[in-house]
Length: 108
Image (cartoon, rainbow, N blue to C red; front, side, top):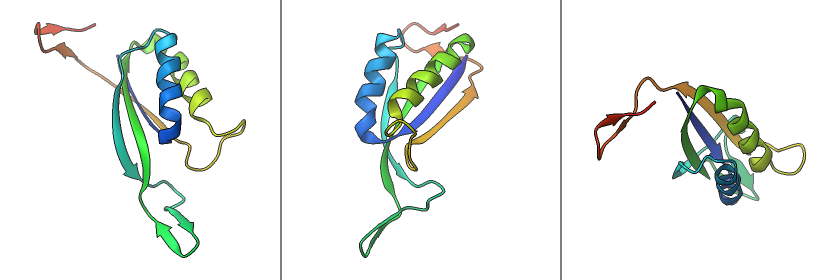
């Protein structure tokens, strides 16, 4: 199992979630987060914003679904055809175990 953590622009979250669901991946956890990347924030006029609002999606998947998930997220979270600074990041980490709380059963 793998956990995919995608940090994306808030205005892209609904389309990414919809496309994931349509592709058979409805189980997603979504958080409102704030932060900055390599650009160290954004300056608009005289105001500097060092924490930019983003959304983080957490998705636990089978290893073989990784390429499909990454493709869906990047295709739908990208700004324009080439993308832009601030579009986000995707992190993939291993998940050793997962349990369903209500039944105390081990998943996968």
